Image (cartoon, rainbow, N blue to C red; front, top):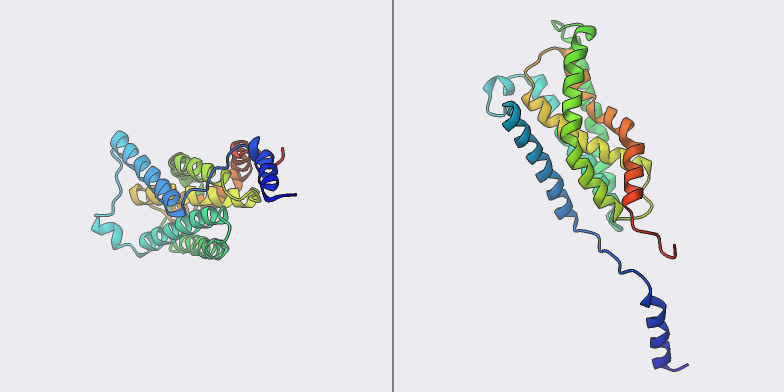
Length: 226
């Protein structure tokens, strides 16, 4: 078989294949997730007047509030990076570091929430439930754009992604929402901080792993040869 005939055969084999879609650059995807999250916070602030209290001295003078904020920031960053990097072949080390960082930050955040509960002087869990549910719902709504952006990216990434990866993505997106909620919430109480702020990423990861995984599979291009 001549070189020319081999080239013709290869061209015939690939002629009917759909063109492949390149995976977007990791920093572009991360920037899009952050931009959508910021846009959600700005839109919410414009509609409700609830803006982050990052310039409030009282917020920064509360060590528990600051510790929870730092923990949620690391949860969000670590989980989003882990999810995005897990979709890119060759970025396994970064994905592993993101998962470790997010896991440690989850433990830190829950510990801070328990510290706030143990501090006493807070309302009971029953009386805090309504406010906690409101903050949880607010964080999940804010997380929707980021979760969709991460899911869209994962659908065009590595095909071996599964439910656990979707859960990590949901946890990261909800962490971004929880950061915004924690920075704008004026409600006090250890139970509220634990239930409405610190637990949000875990709840989202468990609740939305399967739905997000299904959405990612629906968005994924057909497998080779299918």
